[in-house]
Length: 168
Image (cartoon, rainbow, N blue to C red; front, top):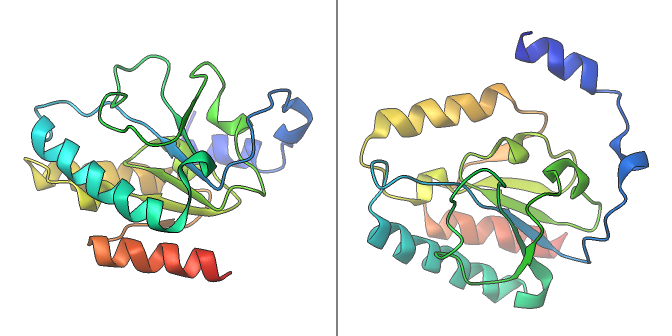
């Protein structure tokens, strides 16, 4: 089945009737993703993620930030130390909420499926060892896009996005 067919089938499907998990009251949800050392240096990645979350904390208190990790991945759980960890068995689709202002990830399809809040990919904010892989992952994410995904090219641009969100 093609992605377009899946999207067409799901566009009118109301998941809200299945939201049985109390996931709290968060302004930001970060969808973690496994990033192999073949893609990015772990030390550099840790520093770059710390920079991203330092900016995020200027706009949102830590208790308003949640992290959701993929259940089948050995993701970046040790790299991000900000926010509450949501149970990884809860599908991301059950976490979308009108209360959440910002969804963050690198290239998780969870970003592509949001229909509320602002979806921000951090893919251009980390140092990839191979730009072709980055381009492929951005294209992959774009194919699943149900909503607009922002791709800030710098920390300054990321901060402007957060400023705009806070002013809304």
